[in-house]
Length: 428
Image (tube, rainbow, N blue to C red; front, side):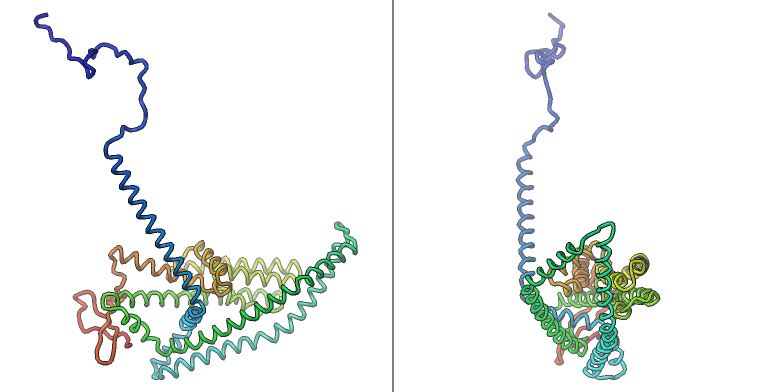
């Protein structure tokens, strides 16, 4: 019809827009987005990235396994070195004091080491006689306690007959006799372990002497084995790890002294035997954080229970809990603010892993080793973030220089306004 404009057909070309579609009542839609042609490419890139990350992770895990295997094989050599470093952190301050007052390095190291051994031997000689004497008294107390336990079991409410108790005792004796060979093997194994520990202690003391004698020269020597680009990082990381290790020993010594003093005072007031040995055990137990204090407190409660009865044991348990609460809520936060900065869960896991891998030595070394790993991780993280962790607190950077006398570690000012002649730090 002239002058009339027909509406254009829809996308199908057959049905006009204002007319209903034949399938309008039955059409359904999905909630999934419409696919694009880029989905396959993106999936390929994501799969390749995941494969590369998995391969890198497997290589890292494999490297850690190999490293653990090598460390396990070289543990006989590494253990004296680690123990020597720990001893050196304790003995270096008096050695440095003597060196600063004109003592030769070898004489200062030997004097401090002999004094340390004499003090340790004096402590052992002081606590050994009362331990031997009071252990016999405790053994008699245990016998009396077993007799009281037997009388308690034969009376109400258990009313167990003598034959039943005697049968249980005989069964325990037969079990011990049947396992006599295994017990003997355990004794031989324990004696062998003690002998190996003594050898490691002797080697650690020898290494401690050399660490004390040549202490300031170790970092320059270690940095000189690398080169100018790596030397600042080697020196800075060495200083940080040494500071962390020294802080750990200092922190745990303070905590151990506080625990030993107050727990020992409580045991002395209550008349519990073996006060001095238990105090010494509490002091050294502090060097195994959390776990060591728990074990030492358990020994104190057990001896109080055997010697003085249930009421005294409860009082000792209360004293131990109060002291440990003061330690955990007052001392540890103050000290860890400038110390290890490790969470309690990390400490517990480290001690558990160390004790399962290397026994009591592993439990003792677990926390300082974990702290050193944490220091290395934070150093690498700061380096990746561009924070220049190799710059020392005084605003200088360690660097290696060489002349006809050998390698020297010097501190070079980083800021232009601090320019000047490098400050000599140590000689190799």
